[in-house]
Length: 261
Length: 296
Image (spheres, each protein chain N blue to C red):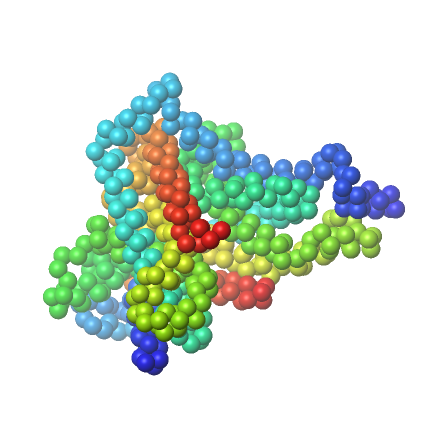
């Protein structure tokens, strides 16, 4: 009876995961096949599509731009969120509730909706924002906010902030010194896990990039979209390269979050 | 040197008698965060709310009446709702099956599957649409393969059913990630106890497991619906904006090539947010009525 049950559960898990894997595996096979028509198996295998892709300067440029925007947005997020959370936890615990409500806004308001307002507000601003990477960095801060805030706030919950700060003060450290030398190292693992996770979904962001910037600053996702009419093998190689990158990022995130517990 | 240590040590050591002035400096540290949050989150939202009521420079409800009078707009709403509700329900059902079975297999398989769902939750938007075009598009490998054996009629990836499959695909990993921790609430002994009392497996699920899990299931359903209703990238990439859903309509009204009507887009956005708020309120009400809600 028990064995029958285990076999049933195993079959169920394997079949669902198996179906989920089909698009990924098919894309992988497609990306390394020279031609794949109406046959069960491709005609031959080749790495040409990857070589084409990795020598395409437009791809490398787009990838570089995406990396720049993601790193800049995450740096900005850390610089803005860390002190804010610290101040809320240490000086204004009553603000907790307000912050918990505010950080849900990026969830509740889909990017398409935000971009309606953003386009109108900044279309004619004195500093050009629309069509530049700067507006993306600002908006990416907002979409990373719920994840970053939750992860960092959880780490703050896990340490005894008040006691740690009191001890540091007693030993003569200033508040900023205590924050940098005592609190920050305690948050490191949670922070790293959330950074890698945020990185992987910021890299996949398309809505803001398409509506606010478009082709004026071609990011990885925009490049992917603009390449839709090229050979399917080429786009498969592109999708797989992207997926491999995401895989590494999520793997790093899970390693750090396991260390945090 | 010594004076600076003294002044900076004061906020914590005399926390009960802190004056308003000594809290001014820490409050300044909140300012940059507040400014950015306002500029990129609150200000656009306020713009959308206010301008949805402005029609030809006057305060009016015309944007809204235009939406409700337009069959095209109503079709966008019904398409969006149809896709998001069905993909959420089916995605949630599959995820529930997967998670419940996942807890009955070895930890090695479990860890692998959790890692896989973690990863595939980021496989959405444009790359996912591409993967689907490659396998299920008009000349997709699987389409051709199935057609060759006559197993596939006229399945159209770029229509309603194709989009539903795509939506379900990106809903499952999210649902699994949200549900997985919730199943910790189930005690394995309950199933054994139910079995001893003569309950069949489906009895146990209907009378014990589902009522206990209902807040988590409802909560997940809401997030899935919100996720699907706001989805834009995958549909846009798959159909180049030719399938009529709300997000595509909004985007084309602010960044399309033809008629730019930002205020109309704002009104659609407000209706969209109102729908999400309504669903959330209903969800809260259902949770309060559920087993876990009554226990509190």
